[in-house]
Amino acid sequence: MIQDILPRHLDNQFRWLTPQKSDIILLFEGSSVLAKWQDEKIYYPDYEEFCTQTDAAKYTFIYVLSVDEIQYFLAMRKGEVLEGSFQGELSDAKVHEEYQSELDGYDFLGVNIFRSAVPKYRAFAAITAYHLYGWYRDNRFCGRCGKPMVHDKKERMVRCMCCNNMVFPKICPAVIIGVTDGDRILLTKYAGRTYKNYALVAGFTEIGETLEQTVEREVMEEVGLHVKNIRYYKSQPWALSGSLLAGFFCELDGDDTISLQEDELSVGKWAHADDLELEDDGISLTREMILKFKEEHAKR
Image (cartoon, rainbow, N blue to C red; front, side, top):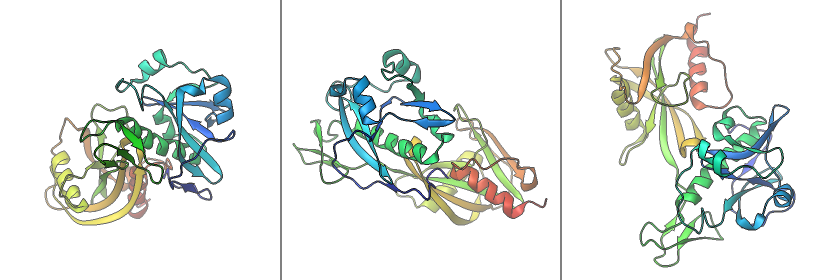
């Protein structure tokens, strides 16, 4: 999965640091990242390169994480994200219209590139930073009293100096569900999304629910089935949705007739293990779970 980057190690411990020449700078606009694709690999500018070719005074640099000895910083535009008037979320088209890259060889690439970018540690570092970028962007003002928030310098938190409201990074619990019936597994496709590959039933946990209750509810809501024998598999941080995914397998309990929630799903079907032709993308919990089922149930 995308977080499996051994022998490299991602360190997300909070530190209040100033970028040095060789540190990596991650600049996000909307759902795009400043990067270049060269020799089948993804690259981001270092601090020296960024400062040489842009007006660095326009940015605030926030340390977010390290991979081994490589330090990564967010570049947040002053007056637009942290201090000034709210501009709203920018579409990819709007990003390319308003924020053309000032750095030679770099362009704003959609963050979905992290699904296939290599080396994987660079993809995981940047997608994790993207999660924090969204949190910093969305918490410039206090939700309690409306005053500006300030960065705490001891931990990953923003604080209101007026009412002492403290806001920590937002992580949404969600489940990925492998519904099985003997040598069959339930596959789905999302409705109205850019991701067109087969997936599994999935959804966010509601207030007051256990993860197991989320499994039961989501399966009933999306495909109209009852399940039993719910078993935890693995978890995965998934920054594109700001979530922590928990994977579960469960078994069909009763009638196998699918009743599709069409505003969520365009396809819901049973597939035999022998008919699964997916390859491991090395990225997603969903793909790993489907292939795990195939490995254990295919007859050929």
